[in-house]
Length: 269
Image 1 (cartoon, rainbow, N blue to C red):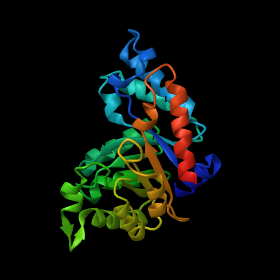
Image 2: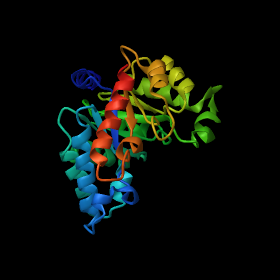
Image 3: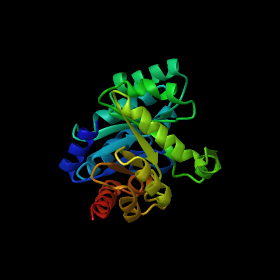
Image 4: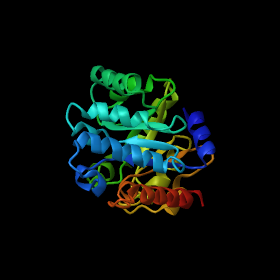
């Protein structure tokens, strides 16, 4: 999977991942014309994908926004993923985390049924909750380590294991599990904590990092690249709101394209 990620990034000359978080209250005015919400979300996401595809190497639909649409949400998600070009990786932001038997079916759903290349999972239940995802040879499972939200300090930083912050203990465990697995494990590490990002890159020099928090949450592209970009350790830098909602008017597609291009260039430079 790491080879495939490197290949995609070389082809696109980009490490940008566009997050698809379609908030109904922030849909552009042209889509608020009385049509069904599911139709509006589908068109919004498909238009964003088309506009940003020249600049992104991956897309990350957030399952919560589609599940909130009700039974039709899964159909919309499937239609949106079908619109994503084959040369872009598809990451399911589902943050699954359950006992082994349940995890097996979560992994089957995301990787077999829905056809995602990667997904996000929570490590709180331990190795057996992640192992079914790592059984998939050509998939990457990104494990939450040090996240970008304010609440990350409540447990990830405050709790320690053998004198080590919890997020570093998680990362080291994930690296060990990945070394023994058929599939690939990576880490979710927020751009809002560049010092932690650098620590985790030192701890896990070859694991792929999925890095949210650039843009609306305040992370800086230059800090991310300096802390985490290495020859052997690939990164995917995710931005959602600052691209999706660069404009809420009729020019929303052009504004999203410009925001994606600008961030792609900032990360590249």
